[in-house]
Image 1 (cartoon, rainbow, N blue to C red):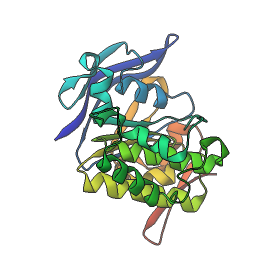
Image 2 (image 1 turned 30 degrees about the horizontal axis):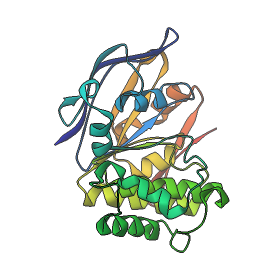
Image 3 (image 1 turned 180 degrees about the horizontal axis):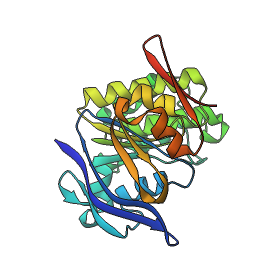
Image 4 (image 1 turned 30 degrees about the vertical axis):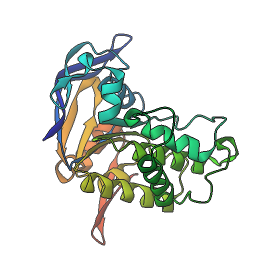
Length: 255
């Protein structure tokens, strides 16, 4: 099943072409990484997918329906997004915040459904935030707030995960743990994922497919091993990039 279908998409900002004639299909169980230099259009593309930014030309469909014809409520029940700026400092507790992830599915605002509570508590447990339920969000560290934002996203249980720099504020151990958890969620829920990141190696490890945004609106898309080559990465980032195979993984690094 195709969760996301993009056809002939053109994106530009202030007459600068970011994406030209983008064609992309993301199906269930697929994990895609979105790579490119600063200003290449990664965040702009994610915002266009959820309908909060207009695009110049083309089509974006979620579950076969044009995004421009979907309400915010329709999109929220299908797509979950983690914004680049992460979670705002809210005057709420950790538990109250994670429960916001269930808002698109709430049947009654008068009381919390026991199933919603169970889902929220399980997400906090998975992200090692259990025991912090009554903490005020503004007392959390940057890393804890990022994990809480991911917990809220998981609590939403979307069919399609959109992540904009999910490793922000996270140490190496938490990056690997949390992306591994999302990888498992995508598989268990028959969901799909598109992750914008500056970390080539995280994308290579946790995503099976890559969209690599180049200069002048050009792009490459396909399987990791076909896209993440020294030649392609050096062109995209305008600096020499080497790839080294070690212990079952390929490490990409500038030099």
